[in-house]
Length: 450
Image 1 (cartoon, rainbow, N blue to C red):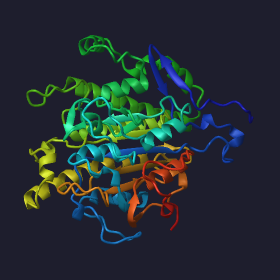
Image 2 (image 1 turned 60 degrees about the vertical axis):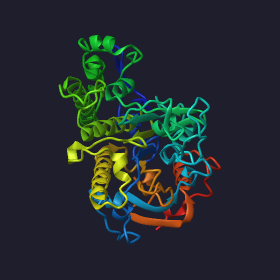
Image 3 (image 1 turned 180 degrees about the horizontal axis):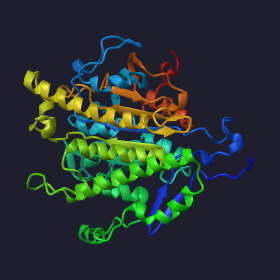
Image 4 (image 1 turned 180 degrees about the vertical axis):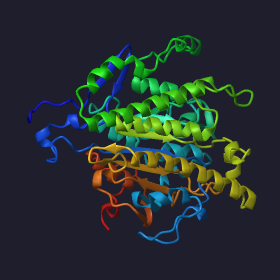
């Protein structure tokens, strides 16, 4: 019998302070409406992944354009995802330049990348930047999801003080800005991010108190087990399989966080390893990627930023045999050994982005995959790290934006095209239509035409 009864899209499993949202299930669409498009169209998500200190551009930019472009050394990890992404060349962040303010390119690069606004040079409390594209989207979509946006990061930093030639640390630490005076620092602790998404624990308490609580902490899924059993009994075979796959992913992420809590290895003296952060950087970044995928899958949010590394980062990468800090290496003065090390770091970062894109592609969502219904920008506010250039930035765009985009191409744009033009085009796809954003001049029409 066909009825109007269905499972509400925003159904949660609840118990003992835990709140677990559900992925899109067939039971959330009335039987008579399946195939008709009624309430079945998946939402479009928007994400931004940022890498610091620029790129070795000769090993990034393909020489050919259109669909037959080659994958360069740095882009090689993405080759299996050719049909799912754009390489976008010649987009600029002009507002990252000095414009009379002298040194401080790293601070300006991070602060302007998503805003298109030249930030005020100050190390005091009178910071001023712009509203970032993710927060424009978050405001426009407010109320449609549990969280208007999530901000994740893989490198901690203070938000006050001088971090770059007279520029506040807020500029180097925060990619996302809710208002010109309000940065949105990323959450760098996977445990805290997980509990924000799936629990209600007070994260403001001191670490010692939280550690005592952790001794008695059950799995999030154990806390909602009664609700889960009751729900699963009402689902068909297909939805039961989806639920099993989704809950397995939640459990697996939770177990990896717990494993990081117990890892006896520690960073060098003087550096604290916050609870829940894996010792090895690739595993750390993948864990943050998995949290973003879960947030998209359960429609907890449709807007996310991921700071893979903050501007001016001095992270070392022993996992790939590099013990030199990243930032100094980028000032290589064409030393071939240093250039090669930077290229290897750049390639590792792309491998991690490929992991995120691959996970989205492997996750079913409505009539397609999460990647089909997403738009993910990967890039840096600096092109050549040796020269601190902000023109012809390294930029990728993955996903189809709900069918609006036609990826699988290397596109180049006219000189002087602001990267904010890309963001206006993306905002249109989530139903948010500002006239301008920062220094934008127009939309990019090439993304949806062959």
